[in-house]
Every structure is written in structure tokens, then in C-alpha cells.
Image (cartoon, rainbow, N blue to C red; front, side):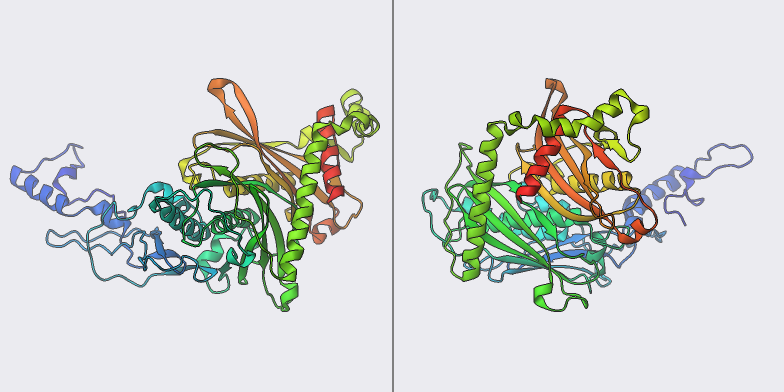
Amino acid sequence: MNPFKRSLSNPFFRFNNSKSTLLRSSIKNRSQTKETISSQNPIFSSMFSDPTLPVFTANSSSFSRVNTHFSYSLKQPKLTSKTQTLPKIRTFCVKKTSPNAELFASNDIPVVSTVSPPIQSSQPIDAGSSMRKPISLWPGMYHSPVTNALWEARSSMFEKSSDDKQDSQSELVAKTPSRSRTSIVYKFSSDYILREQYRNPWDEMRMGKLLEDLDALAGTISYKHCRNDDGATRPILLVTASVDKMVLKKPIRVDFDLKMSGAVTWVGRSSMEIQLEVTQSTPDSPHPSDSVALVANFTFVARDSKTGKSAPLNQILPETEHEKLLWKEAEERNKMRKKKRAEQKKDIYNGDEDRLNALLAEGRVFCDMPALADRDSILIRDTCHENSMMCQPQQRNIHGRIFGGFLMRKASELAFSNAYAFAGAAPCFLEVDHVDFFKPVDVGNFLRFKSCVLYTELENPAKPLINVEVVAHVTRPEQRSSEVSNKFYFTFTIRPEAMKEGLRIRNVVPATEEEARRVLERMECESSQ
């Protein structure tokens, strides 16, 4: 029965069917009815009528937090004037521990979601009990249990830092990579609710969600590295600067347990590189060496929280041979990034007019003689897709700006949609070619994502590659300005079974010199990697 249906026994809503007029009861009956309704809230009771409520929890060694999601089932409550029974509602909470306990006593951060047993007792709901700490410390509550756990861990570091009255900006120490190592375990095999958050319509992993978690984990590792021996984190801002090539080595399944781990591998003066690994053991790859599914390298930069200028970081002391090898590889990547920036300033395209003209040749045919254009090709501008959004406070990080992982997820999902519409079949994520974070995105910004298929690689007909570019613009209509804040580059492929059905992937050609330069730049970067 609909709980909001007007009851025939209610004198305020009794209708005369013959005359269609409202019959009013006596003053005595009217007062009794008011007392009954005020003592029981039928709408509130109906929304919380099911005593079995699904509960999400994200736990680490020093905290526990519960997020309640209510059942959609609505049942008609029995209204009485004597009692009002409501199920007990669990609110967000933090488990207090000893002040001397280390935040990361264990490097593993389990992510758990379960279903609570039926609740028998009843007690009033405190509307403010879920937010006892400043709201700036809980941005992760609007995201997955993974970001919940990671941001709560990072929030604990910030609280320790704010309680420490001494400015430890100049107190730099050298730390080993093992000191910052952190991992997260996804119990997909046994946790149905958690699995549902990461499943896409094809029963595969939502890669955008995984990219979001990777950025959150990298940020927590960076703060852990900056955490001194006394437990305090120096008052600096750590932001994602770039993400290097991230190749998917094997498909990630959503029905097997997954582990994500990483550590700081290289530190410069004010920047650091964090390497993350996603591993998953399946019946097809039981050996640990075959379980690595993805490797990602994030670069973070440090800024002084007061001046905004670059801030020095704790140095790193690699101990094992593997750690020394990772440091050497990261050092080479850092040199390559500096070389690339220097070449871009010199405008390397000035002496490469022949390659530009070759790229533009087919595009000119499309523009000037469309009837003679190659039917197996398509202009870049005809593959464009856009998406716009207002940046809400629910997507902010602990600095009050939009979480970089959220931007990566939105860009990844738009790139997937673009490749889907271009190919005519559901694409498979293959790699993140590169991500650049040029400018921070603030809460309240009007953000526009513009994507296009930049070029395709059709040398292997059984495994065509679709390279998608997504550019994020911070648009300010009141100032008539639009600035590029982020650039994302993704590569997708098509399943072999789809190619066997006669699917045809077109070649993409530029029509303007600016498009040709972008294509040439990405090809140069791909060849250098």
C-alpha cells in the first residue's frame, strides 16, 4: 500500500463521492487527529521501514567508518498513538585509538562492505552526529569505500600536523621507499556490494573508477612520505602533476580479489614519483610474476601552503637492488620530461613542414573535394564529443580543490564513450598514454571536457588501436575566458570477436595545422616511450 495515500479514516481527507465536497469533523476529532499525526511521522517511518539496511564500511588500523544506504522498499506502517518504532540508523563514526598508535601500523588498508543484521532497538537520530570533524577533512565520504579509507588516513595526518605548533618546514629527513609503501585489498570474490561499484555493463572492471583510486592511493603515499618521525606532516600542498604511460598488461576481472600497492620510488627537490602496481591472481595466472595487471607512475609536486612556491621534500634512500633500479628508471623519466619541455619551448615543428603537409594532405581533400575523399577515412573534427559539468564541493580533495582522480575518471569515461561511438563496438581499455595537470580546478568552476579520436593505428587488423584525446577547459562565462586545465590521452582497442564480424575502423585525418601539430606531438611522444 502506498504510505502517502490519503486514508479514508482521516477526517481531514474524507470526501463525499456524491457531492465531491470536503466533510469537516468536529473540533474534538480534529484535535485527536492532529495529536496522532504529530506523534507519528508516517513519511519518515515509511522511508526507514525495512530493518535490514545495507551498510558500507571502510576500515584501517586506526579508524572505522560506516556509511548507510537505505532500502528502497516502502511499507505502510501501522500508525498508533502509543509507540513509534524505528530501526536504529548507524551514522558515520571514527574509532578512537591511543594517541601514540601509529596510523599505518599495517601497510594494508582493507576495503570492506557488508550487510548489517536486523536492528531491534530504537533511539533518536542525531542529525549532527555524522560530521563531528571539520567537513574539509571528509571529502572522501562522497566517493567509494577506497577513497573513504585513503582520505580518512590522510585526514588523520592533517590533524596531527595542525596539532603540532612547531613549524617543521625545514626539518627534512631521508626515508626509505618501504616507509611509504601502502596497499589496498579489494575483496571482490566475497563482497558483492563492493563488486557492484566497480562493475561495468559488460561485467568487466570500470577502469575510470580504478584510475580514481590509483590517484587517491598515490596522494596518500606522498603524504606518508612527507610525514616525519614524530607523526606530523609538514604544512605543504602535494598535487598531481602528471601520470606517465600506464599500460594494462592483462584484463582485470571484477569477480576476483584485487590488490593495489605502491611506494615513493624517486624524489627530486620539490617533486616525487610514485609507482603503483595493480595485481590480481586468477586461475589463468596463479603465479605471482603473472599477476601484475597494471603499473602506473604518478608525479607529485610540493608547494608551500602559505606562499604557493615550490617546497623541498624528504629525500629517498633506496636499499634493495629493486628499489635502486626503480630509482634509476624514474631518474631517466625525469630527464626525459625536462628534455621534452625544453624542445617544446624551441618549437620543434619549425623544421618539420614536410611531415605536417603529409598529415594535412588527405584533410585538404575532405575540405576542398569531399566527393573524392577516401571513404575509409574521417576528419578529426567529425569524431568530437563534449561533456560539461559544474564542479561541486562533493568532488573536492582535502585542499578544497577538485580531486584529480575524479577528473581522470570523468575523462576516461568520456574517452570510452567517444571510442564506442567511433568504432561501433564496445572498446577495451588498453593504456593511459599520458596525463598532464596544468592548472588546479576549483569548486564552482564550469568545466568542459572536449574529446576526439586523435589518430588510429591499423597496422594490425586484428588489434586496431584508437587513440583518444580529452582536454579539460576551465570556463568562466562572467570573465569571457577559457583555460586548459588538464590533458588526457587514452588508447583503446576492439575485441577480436568484434573484428571477425566485419567491423571496420576508419583512419582519422587532421584538417587544420593545429590538429596536425597535436597528432605529430603525440606520435613523437609515443615513439620516445
